[in-house]
Length: 91
Image (cartoon, rainbow, N blue to C red; front, side, top):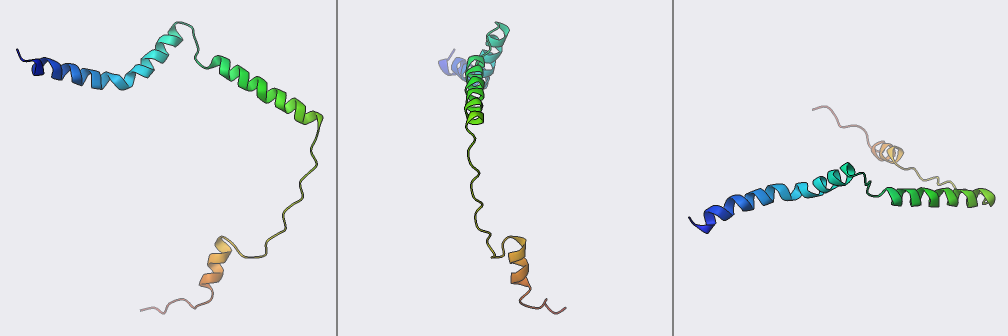
């Protein structure tokens, strides 16, 4: 028996199963009762809640609105560009 005939199926099996390893690891952790990232989510939610409390205590003054631009934009710009010439004559 040649080594190539044994090594080829093993290589194909490893290539097939390699992308599934993270999923298998996550499922194993969940089955064992450990929830990855749970502590990070709790810390993040506490940080967000603390930030809201400090913001509520000191309200910021409203920022002034930027000056209104009178130049056409978007669909109006296209419409004005097309309105400067008549439609093409029917053939």
